[in-house]
Length: 266
Image (cartoon, rainbow, N blue to C red; front, side, top):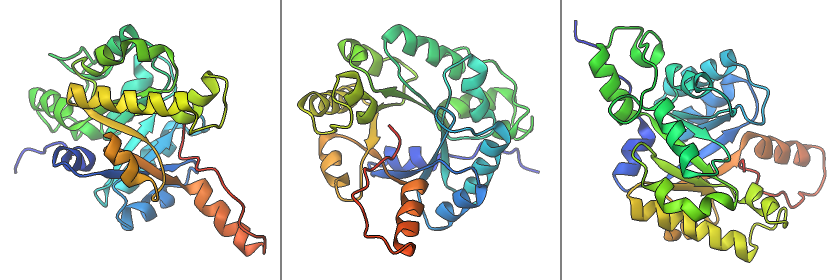
């Protein structure tokens, strides 16, 4: 019998090959939505614990439903202890997204908590889905987890821009993700996603990621994905289940489609 290995990240494989990766955000808890997205070929689903009342069993089932069809899951974690950060990885999420990272010191603490030696000092278990329930030898598990699981830091406030290059160049940071919605609110222009300061920050985040040799992510639409890619963004969330179902129900109700703001998760 061969020794099991950790499932490789589809997102990382594609990003490392130079491809653009698209994700969709799930607000609903039903794992069948994750399965449907995976069946239709979506690269990655982004599920949420910052704004959504998901519990761990919901997250676990969404991850399992997606990975059956080789689709990655990213979990945006709630801000909390290291346990809140590593538990999605132990459930075999491909990556986690940490919201509102505001300093290089904060980024260093996150990396220390979620990456194994020699990058960080994540607590070791290996007895969960990501370690094939202790069937992967511990040294292989540590090496594979550092290579095939990733951490995304959300830049959605003005404060981290002063240290953006230091944050991007920190070993163990895999992606910077610009959140224009919260950034627009933080500068006193809520919802103005094309405000000059938002546009400037969008460019600065992408440029910092490119300089550091890591990946840049943000939210967009199928229509502006190519434009964002030209700025350096390789990971783009292009929609969400709530917007899709809302548009469908609106049509069924006989109403004219309204202009719906793309809330891919900010």
